[in-house]
Length: 119
Image (tube, rainbow, N blue to C red; front, side):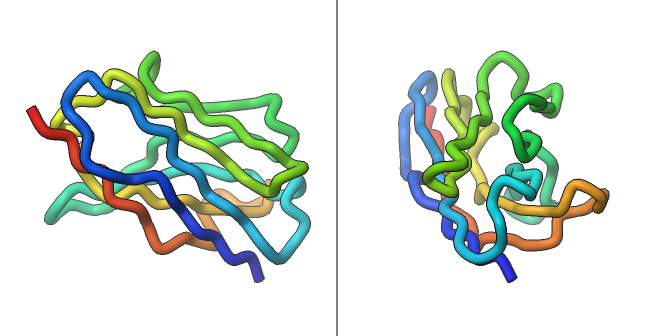
């Protein structure tokens, strides 16, 4: 069982930046692919970015390419999402997830952190 806790969400103005963190406990962190989804009000969760266990491979949704950067620190059991040039459309709850490499879908989820971007 992997427990995930996201932090870093807050209200910012358009054009601003945030760094979201997701601290993991339980399991062997470096063996899990990690990633982020987000959920807009009244919508299903959508994929944002993921990173392989070693950190060598990353993948982004087209909507965030060039503005968001995912990274991880396997010594701190933490994955990060640097979000730059924020837009009001980025407002939502950001969820961290973990999954073994052999699974297609997330296995463990955090509770989410709210990001609000004002215009």
